[in-house]
Length: 206
Image (cartoon, rainbow, N blue to C red; front, side, top):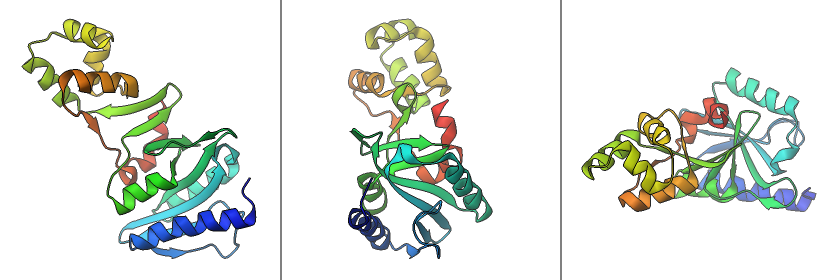
């Protein structure tokens, strides 16, 4: 757990990123310990932000209150975290989820707001996954005159999996995505628009 000084440093880093991206900030009157630590607003985007050292320390009742409050305010809940459990850092560029609230690292926030580089990967129970442009995948496969069966063999997955990737009904493991993009020599991974996905982020884990 972060001591008060470390928490203050973390809080300062987060607020600096928001301020550099021209968000207006405010903090709850009750101070630390509530379901959120920071309110960030920019034009039509309102974020209720919770800062956590260990994202698995989030209590379910706090998550429920945060989601409910965000819904009431037509805003979005967001967690900025540092670690998973006690021994693993949150990976940069990856969107996690706790109680249907998206979780990102400080560096992912920085890349998103200051460099306009949205995350490409999300963490699910089955590991790290990405969303593919299914139509482009199909187009590139057909350009190479490959059947579903032949293409599946070349990238090491089932024919059914390729069919579902192209339809967009299932997402792709990061390992498989890298193999497919390398084989076709073309990018297929779609960026995660955090502010569009944020209300349905829980569905990313199913």
